[in-house]
Image (cartoon, rainbow, N blue to C red; front, side):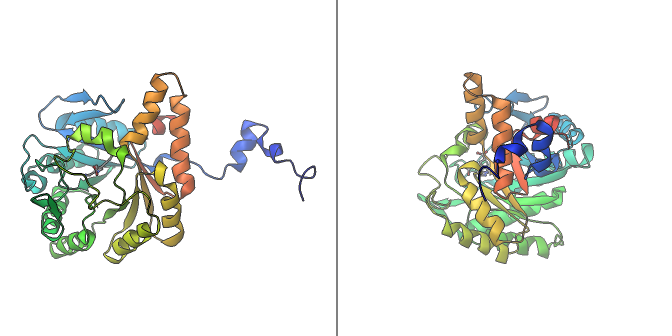
Length: 324
Ligand code: PBG
């Protein structure tokens, strides 16, 4: 049966009607806010390439975390930006490192928040790669120990969850084993399982100073044309003990988010990354699009594709605008 028996416009006639038949609803509970932490105190410095996003020192990030908690956002993802970097990324697993200090401060000041840490070496290595480097090669197996120790140090600092984003093979299993050996068998792993080598990370790499000094990340992050391969990555992480699977970036990879949702029973997360976020702001600043509407539309499309959890720099702004 079709027109004129059916008129799809009937259910679109008013806001109350549209609300009633909406298939997807965005809630604050769906959102996680990434936060960038730098050394020093009293620092609350806007990041030029990411409007509305800041570098916070540990003392300041606690205030921000309280604000985020009061807005009803359930959690944050922490990225540390140390002053000193070296070849092994020694700063990544120090007990008094930047992220470790931020975790304990936030746990104390905003105790309702789920504090998740990004586990990677790229912010801590002078060459900017996500693992140990020999010549121009990023070595897989030797990187696993560094990553595992980094995750362990975050756990010891009190993190509620760890999120490896390096894309070395076997890292979820290695981290799981290390956590278990040290009594953290109940600490969940949110794995950046299908992470693509994307141009959309540009503003983030500016923000954390992690653009690789040589080469690029295509030797370990996924190649954008590949869809079936994402299922292999996701499956590997399920088998290695991941608790939540993430697809990244989100908007340019909604097919992968949908595949992940259809194929696995684990919660699916998607990361609306820096470039995707900043493009909306840039266009809005030119007056070319309505930034608030575009941000909401982008976020709801990620949920519609199947994501249960959405990492977005707009999490606090959206939470302030959402009804529940
Ligand atoms: C790596 C990491 C990156 C992002 C999150 N974790 C950058 C990269 O792989 O180069 C990107 C996030 C964003 O662009 O918003 N630790």
